[in-house]
Image (cartoon, rainbow, N blue to C red; front, side, top):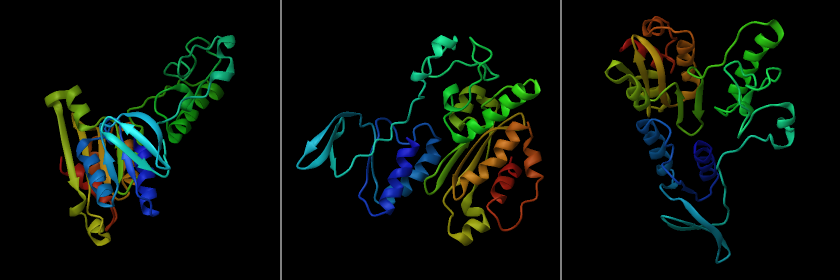
Length: 270
């Protein structure tokens, strides 16, 4: 997963020899074209990425850790398992409070327990996206309801996420493949490449692109891979959250020379 790839690149740059054992496809939930940009860079740095290699057994061989997989066995001095996390709710006695749950607490769009409306839930415990910034967003949603009695509901269409490799890979909304499956021929795609941006050229960071999925003139998703992708995706998260049209993004004036011009140019190309 993304965290495993982040750790792999960090350790290879610290001087370790790194092999990534991926049970399915590396960065398989991301846009394949964008993921390839990241994986090509990581392999160029010496990281071995083995895909479709489900772990079958972990043991010892010759004083080293051995991992047996469907693609063969791999040995090393250390094993880092980046397999995600689960919500820690087992000791909360939720059943006694009539709080319905399975792997997480079951909530409605207002982030209230579906079985006990006095209970609000945010962050990982509410299920869904497991990001720090989502927990912060959830807090804002429930504060409006708890303290001011205002109607408020959480949504996920405008929530971005970033894989902090080099280059970074950022996403908000659906990927091109996901959007095409939902919207078919109604989907338009706007694109601009880093190698056409003067700041990227000056900084020698020309690998990457921004791709924006558009329906009826409005962005519904964006994929960015490249230098500072995590900083650039905020423009598209803002546009999606507020229902802006592409011309609204194209109308902004970005200072020159900055990477921020990439989003403006992508919008202007539509």
